[in-house]
Structures are given as C-alpha cells and as structure tokens.
Amino acid sequence: MRANARAILIVALRDAHRWLGELLSDPHQTLESLASREGKTERSIRMTLSLAFLVPEIVKAAVEGRLPRGFGLTRLVDLPMAWRDQWRALGLQAPAFCVGIDKPFDRFSWRQCLPRAATCDRTATTPAA
Image (cartoon, rainbow, N blue to C red; front, side, top):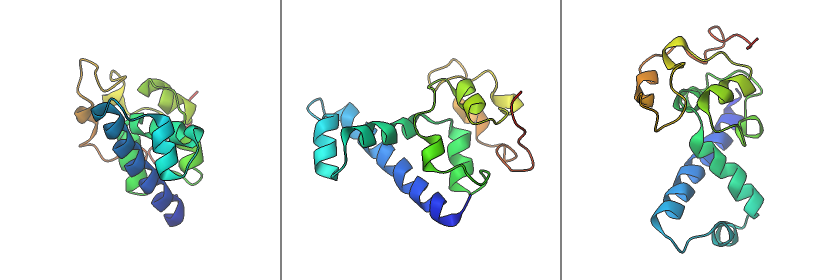
C-alpha cells in the first residue's frame, strides 16, 4: 500500500468513526446534516461510514501499511457487514484465530485477533478459493 493511499485511508477511517459516534450520540444528527456540514454528498458519507465496520485486523494492517498494493479506500468501502465475508470480498484468507468471529457483538471478542501480527502481511495472505 502506498503512503499517500494509506494517509487517505487513515483520514477516512477517522471520519467514519467520528461520524458514527455523532450519529449514535445525537438523535438529531442525520446523514443529510453531516453531508451539509462536511461539504460532501450523503452517498459519500454512507460509503465512508462503512469503514467503521471493517474487521479490526484489516484496519490495523491498513494503518501499519501492511495491506497489499491496490487495497486503498476505494477497495475497502462498502464491504459486506459480516467479517468473514469481508475477508472473502477482498480475496484474503481470514487468519485461523479469527475464523469464528463474524461481528463486533459475537460471543467471541474481536480483541482476540489484535495481538497477532502476521495477518494481512503480503507474505502471509493468500487469495481465497
């Protein structure tokens, strides 16, 4: 992943989490008001918000610059909600220790995935079958 693509993605991830927090904490906040304030379209806001639901290990790899070339903002927005499906949609193999974890509210903690470093490394990923 190139440095400029990584910087753009990090800003988008920050915005996604900030906007999600605002939408959850303020019942009067809408996508329309966010779009107006930010000078963006509602579609752009929705697509960016989808980044707030990425698999934490994919986010970590993106921030560390370990995603393969071509895995920028455009490829990561609007992925499926289920984490297992996100891995598949990206053509990456989910790490074995994260296979049973599909969403943040699963009975397993997504934090189980964070200590391991090998996932998403260019040498550790293989295309999904």
